[in-house]
Every structure is written in C-alpha cells, then in structure tokens.
Length: 259
Image (tube, rainbow, N blue to C red):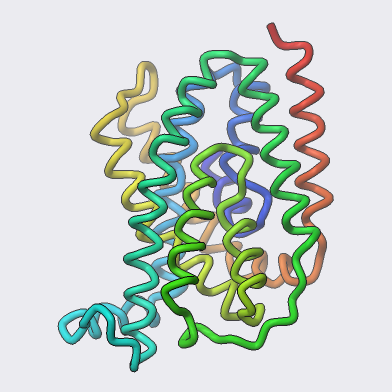
C-alpha cells in the first residue's frame, strides 16, 4: 500500500480512495482502519514533496522572519499567505468531512458508494478543465487562498482527489499549467502535516502497530521519490479522468453487492 501511495499520490485519481478500495476488497481490512492508514501513508509522500521542492521550501523558510501579513510585494510573501490561509480553511472544512467519512465507513455499502460517487465527481471536474491560463505563482491572491482552501478541504473524503481538484481549480483561476501543478503540491505539505498530527492525537490502531505504519510510510516515501518526476510528466500528457471515472463506477457497482 505504501508503494501504491507513492505512485498514485502525484496523479489526480485520489490515492486515498483507491487505496481504501484495495485494502478493503483485497486485504479484507476494516473500513475505518483502512481510512486511517490511508492518511498515515501520506506522511511518506509528504517527505517526497519536501525533497522534490526543497529549494522552494528553503526560500520560504528564509523569508519567514521578514514575513508580514497583507504585504504582497514579494513572491515568497504572497506564497506564505496563500499556504497559511488555504491550510487553515482546509482544516476547518476538512475536519468535519473526515469525521463524516469515519462514520460512513461503518456502513460498508454506503461507504463504497460514496467513494465511487466522489471519484466520478473528481473525473467530471477534470474533464471540464481548460489549460488556458497565464497567471504565475507570484500572482496568487486572497481569493485564490480562500477558494483553494475550501476545495482542498473536500478532499478529506476518500475519492475526492486532492491534487486533481486543486489543480483543476487553480487552472480555472487562470494559472498556467506549471504554476498550478507546483502550487497544488506545495499545498499538500502543510495540509498533510496537520492531518498527521491531528490523526495521531485522535485515532488509535486496533491491529497495526508503529513498525507496520513506519514501513508503509517508508515505502511510500521511496516510491514517491522514484516516481514523482516521471509521473508529473505523464499527468500532463494523458487524460486520467477516464481512469478515475472507471474506478468510481466499479466502486459504485460493487457497493450494490455489499451488505
């Protein structure tokens, strides 16, 4: 599962939704436990993103001492404001959605159906995306922060692709493909970090221990480092919405036979 997380995280197909379907269908894991484990596995790909975008994050860290809210003159100042506001809104929107997902996970057929519907929604949004923007990272503004924070919050439910939805709405907001792709992955780092901390404080594993989780995170980190550059290039060239809608339909149909 860690290897698959590292491969799927960079594609707009909801790694969390696909992993949960696999863990429940193939490995017979409990739905609620699969949901929690899928979040923990994001720690590995978080480290992959930090390594891959290390120069950008290093520049942001260097800019923190001189950061002033409301000042938008420098690129780093705009980006820090964007990441802070979008992460805060993601937490406000995403926390109740994740708790709803935990409740839904106790009803297998409903959970599978909702994941299937979410994957289909993700695919439709991507299908409607048009790559015609000219704005760059240094052009992000307050409206971008508010909209993208809310959109990213909905990805707390499995099947709603975080990368797919944020990338699509960044493109809708007029950013060019390269800037939208970079911003989408930069947003993942503080968001996943906050999710890891929150989950560690509120959730306990019934059967999986520390070393099992650590092994999964390590494998997702290694596969993420290995695949991020290649898969980002692939994601720009092929239409992954067809894969997303296919898996969504399979999950939706499967839910009809689950008690």
